[in-house]
Every structure is written in structure tokens, then in C-alpha cells.
Amino acid sequence: MNYKLLGTSDLEVSEVSFGCMSLTGSEDGNIRLLHLARENGINFFDTADLYEKGRNEETVGKAFKGQRDQVIIATKVGNQWRPDGSGWDWNPTKAYILEAVEQSLRRLQTDYIDLYQLHGGTIEDPIDETIEAFEQLKQQGKIRHYGISSIRPNVIREYVKRSNLVSVMMQYSLLDRRPEEQMLDLLHQHQVGVLARGSLAQGLLLGKTPKPYLNHTTVEVTQVAEAVKAIVGADHAIEASVRYVLHHPAVTTAVLGIRTESHLNQALALADVPATSPEVIKALQTQVPTDIYQQHR
Image (cartoon, rainbow, N blue to C red; front, side, top):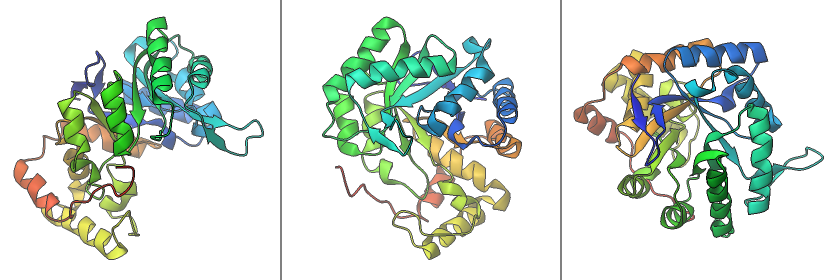
């Protein structure tokens, strides 16, 4: 497994990491899966207080109790569940963040969070107040570093300009090349690490039943999936898809949704795959037109 420093932080994270949102089924089975991942070199685990109303954090906490120094735990904040459980509301205020972190620490059974991320964000948010909350938590030792999870260029620019964030989580894949227009280069320039999610485009790049995806029609999605197979071979579509995302120097890790041992084995196999050649990258890019973010620019 290769490891990279996340932005300007001291967090050395595995190039392939574990997106915990996909965990389903029995808690014991999920804990076993998390242990297998750690034992085989994955050290970065991403969850959120939103997932399963906090139960996802609880599972991660139980899994790594007594192993805390061997893993890097990331979680997210900003989506506040309503008291009746009917849904959640966006709340990026300082008061809420300072309250929510205590609950995440309790569920994760730890006294610090390695990476605390704002789970969304709009340009209308009280951004300076949000940053104040994260900076205060750093000073208190409750979090080591902070970042945001966002695909909105206007929001990302403001945090790059006004904060000490070390990471941005964003969707990026061959079927979603919007980050290539400006955001990846901007983040690389400012030494902000990218946590890439959705690199398999919901499995559509691996031959899952095609459907429309972003601005791509079903026919276009089919053509791209077939082109990937033609370029790298049907048995290497997952490697090519993930390695494509990792080829950009801004990207620190591909956060893969893992919910079964089969998924984990596929992720672990990527550790032995060499970097994709520039020729293959170019060939893959010719199959998908570039795109731009139409909103929140």
C-alpha cells in the first residue's frame, strides 16, 4: 500500500481508503471488515454523524477501540437531525459544531478526531464562524485537522482563501471530470489534499446496468464503460477507474465505498497496481468530454 501526506497535515493516509457509509448488515460483520482493512494496509476510514443517525460512527468506534493509534479517523458535521428523526437540517453554526463534536467523540470512543469535515456548505453560510469553530477545536486538541466535503467551487475557494483546511472531499471520476476544470489545480497549488469519492461512478464504469449519470445519457455511459474495457481489458476496469482518479497530483486518496469482503479484496488489489501510464490516461480522457460545474461558480 502506498501512503501520502494529506495536504499540509501530518496525516499519512493510504492511497486507497475506506468509505464507511456503505457498511450494511450486522455490526459484527462490519467490525470484522474494518479490522481486515486495517490489517491489510488501509489506515484511513471516513464516516459522518449523518450516517445511520450516528450508528456508523459507533461501529467505527467499537472496531478501533484499543487500536486508535493505528488508524486515521475522519468524520463530518453540519447536518443536524430533527428531534423527531424525520430528516435533517443544515446547521454550520459554531455553537452546533462545538456541540456535535462531543457526540461524535463519544460515539467514536476517542478523545480526538484526526480529520473533522464540514459535510457540505453554501456561500451563504457564516463561513468565518464555521472556521472559528474548527480552529477552536484544534486548539483544544479535540480535532487534529479539518476540511470540507463539497463540490461547489465558490465554497471551496472561500475556504482555501480564509481557512487552514487540509482537505476537500469531492466527487471525481472518468464520468465526472468537472474537478479538472479548475478545482484540482487550485487545491494542488495551495497544498490542499483531495479525498476523491465516487471514482467508480456508482459501478457504471465496471459494467453495472447503465443509466443516465450527470450530463451523460445512458448511451454515453455505455460507450464510456465499453471504451474503458477496450483500453485496459475487462478485468482491469476497476484498477483503471481508480488509477485515473489518483493520477492527478492533487488527489491524496480514493475513498471507496466498501460493504463486503469482495469489495475489500478489490480495493486491496489496487495496492499492487502500478501508476497508469500517461498514454493510458490520455486514451481514457479521449472517451469522455470534459465538463464544468454549471452552478455555484
